[in-house]
Image (cartoon, rainbow, N blue to C red; front, side, top):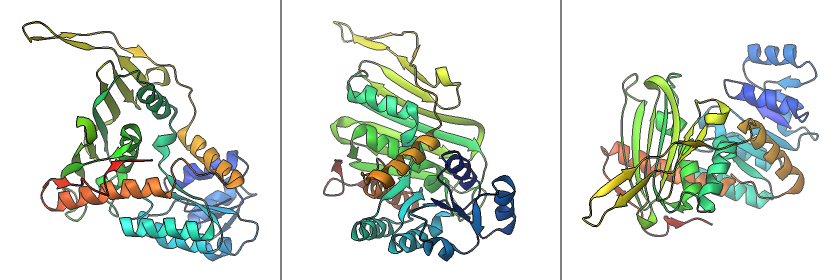
Length: 334
């Protein structure tokens, strides 16, 4: 395995892949980062030219954790060199570029996986099981808040940096693309980069959702809520492990006079194994490389997330005008 990019998120990949004893090389253009890798992990080779990795016969797979604008050219080179690829989110900045990666992987019979790390979170996987097994009842509404103060980006907006996580989870839970959406937002630090967005989505069967992201928020909030007609589930990633997933069996009863009465209930924590999501993601990629099985977050699922991001960007740029997508680009996902 080789890692390309050892910045803020790449260092996490470095740690996990080193622990998995699968890392052989690290490539980064920054000399100080390469020196830091050599100091901490003297047995790991480093280089500044990605071609050294692409030409290396002992490297079978590559993790790309570089700025988003470089994902497509690097991934295309890696696939052309016969390497399997795990590319961080967003896999590309347009749907057409994402499809290029999918087609390139298919032509070369290579594994292409997208780093939607939250889909590997044990709580998210448990939440998916609760929805699939009907524990929550019929899903009515979903909302996600991914908020913090900083790190303010200059390359990509809060929509493209934060929202892919929650879009991916929402699509997986609903099992369908949205039929319509509208996105609103504002750029306050840099007029060219949006800092805050709210995306409202409508799915089939009357399911609605919204995704609120910002890096200009007074406190950290990572919360994902699913409202069913039997129970409500709250995933709060800022809470300690035993409190991350809580079920609320609240009920709303409609009396004979059609007056609704709310029956509140105590929240019940759900026991979920405490395992680092990135480690689970990396283990899954490694297993796919060895067995040639299709990854959970494959290129096709990455393109679906890109499609929603692109629709949201179009709505955002037109002042929040609603976008309808009933047709071949919406509907149930396989």
